[in-house]
Length: 640
Image 1 (spheres, rainbow, N blue to C red):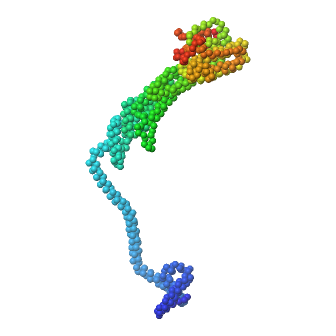
Image 2 (cartoon, rainbow, N blue to C red; image 1 turned 180 degrees about the vertical axis):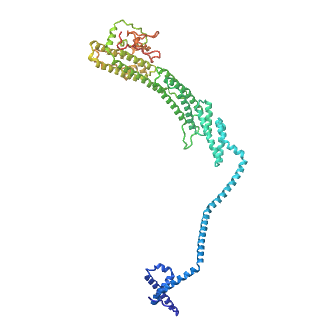
Image 3 (cartoon, helix red, strand yellow; image 1 turned 135 degrees about the vertical axis):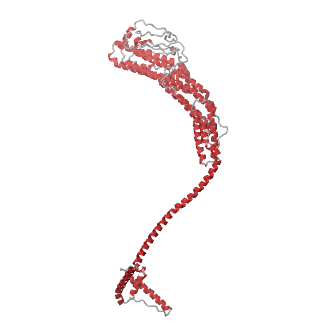
């Protein structure tokens, strides 16, 4: 190990050299020490403690003998230091104890002081906020005191303003609408000036609620039986309220009056269709006319004097009323058709007259709907006629299932007795008496004549084709029923029964069907049909079977049963009578006369008569007094 070189103060150059050598030597010593004591002393330990480094440098400069004695010296010095420490502690142990106690006490006191300071620091923000709140509350209290003083000085004026909602509610509930509107206008002015004040906002809200109640009351008045002067006042109040536009006000008026009209119509009993529809016609004619009069007196449907501004949307206010009137007429037509389909008996002509008068009264306000009544009555008339014809066909089919030719033979056997031929009355249409020998045909004809008499009450010319088609279909079904009876009974026919069946078919084709044709031509005169179509009566045959049944189509299925002879069916229009007679009342089964050719009639009732050849056809359908005569039907199997 190299020893440290002493510094010589001879010259400056030698001093510099010496310092440089010392620095180099110190660096070398540190490197050497770090290499020697790497395991015992970490480098960081002796570098941080100057005494350790100085001692190690001192050891590095000692000789071998000193290094050998160094452990002993260190042990002696250590024992000496320990002895001195023991002596010092023994001699001053009280001082050490008091010092330790003082230290502990001071440490504890410092901890308490620190905790108190922490709590104080934690409470300081809350104390600051409380101080600020106190200052703010003090300012508010001062401001409130000034406001209370000012309020006390203006107590009377403020009380009047605060009582406005109560006064408004009293005016509305007592129907003082003029005063209520003035209060509402005053409150609107207050709102424009003092909209930021909560009390004013509360007053405005309460007044608006009272205005809403007033609006409901005014509209409710329109839902009652209100007269025109009251309507004018109510609409005037609604306009001053400025709640609705002009178009909305018209809609509201019509809705309210419509609700009142519906309440009246709903109160009409619905048990009897005829009573319901007649009362509905009367209520609609009276009240609906009043509503239209009120509307036209209040609102004007004339065009505005000034054109609308650019970009401004205009509402066609006249279309509102027009659409409402169309809706009410459509609803009335629906109710009318519903009640007609429910059945009103034989009063269709009376109901048609009432409806026509209703439409005529509406023509004064420009809402004549009589043209829409014709299709309704036509549909009901043809539907009722079709239903009656179907029932007649069903009854004929039921009678044919239990019909036997033996009863007919007995009736035909008694026909040799002299029969009383009733006198005929000019202008009547007498049913063929030959059908009395065949009860199913007679009953079928009676049922068809009943349907004709019901149809005669409302028999427009437009139904000619539908009625003819319905009757042709019914006759086709009757023909099929006769053919089915022939197929079922043909195998057991005797010669007499076969002859009777041929007479049955002949009566059906030569008596019943031509008679029905004459009835059709009385209901629908060819001259009237031709006049309606705008053609001459001679050209009517080119337009199909209008007003008469195609007999050849009905005769064709039964041709093989009839005897081989040439049969000509003449449909001369001049064979028709101008009127139809009233139906003969049928007697109950137990009271019917055994003589089928004689009819019992009430005193004073006109007797049927065959039409006179060459008589002119009536230009109009038969009047209410006339009806098609019926044939008394003996029960099947009834013996003369």
